[in-house]
Length: 267
Image 1 (cartoon, rainbow, N blue to C red):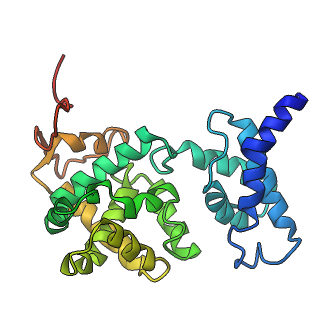
Image 2 (cartoon, one colour):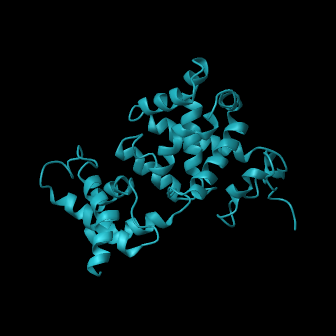
């Protein structure tokens, strides 16, 4: 880099990385203590990634995603390439851009409408509740701050398997809502109160129950005779085997709002 490029890189990337790594997973023995060399390794990987992938660069939260990988692999070079692979899985790791997060939230809203109609009605009755602010962190950090590391790794592996869907992380989100949203409805919580409610559940939720519930909801979804065209994208990327010979749900044109164009429309 030229001196000017170095100065820009320090302001926009390096200074942010240095602040983030010293407060990431410090209770984990692998990163605990002052002067821990593993913190420096984490910083090196993130800086190299930002330079390697300048289109994506670095955004806050990447250190949360890297920490369990580095802790598991404990090798700088191998952890770097595993992190590169993780960040390439765009359907699982939602980069904080409007298109990525909006697409996932749109799918999740439709899943809630179909699978948890009482919660959907509750969300409709409150201003801004349909923004689903309480689950943004789930998607952006892949549940990293909601469950213990051992459970999070199991959830990641379940998502990486691409079993029946590339969007299993949305069924995990749906499972959290199915299990823990009764209080939200009973107390008639507003949007900001829902955010506080689900934030207070972090690290207290039963991860094994959520995994089982998510698998059950996926199975239940696949047994539906019809699914809305707004969810047709959930079954596009897996290829053969996504919808096997047991059942292939029909698509119907419902669930549109405003001037949305139906995905089934033929030009």
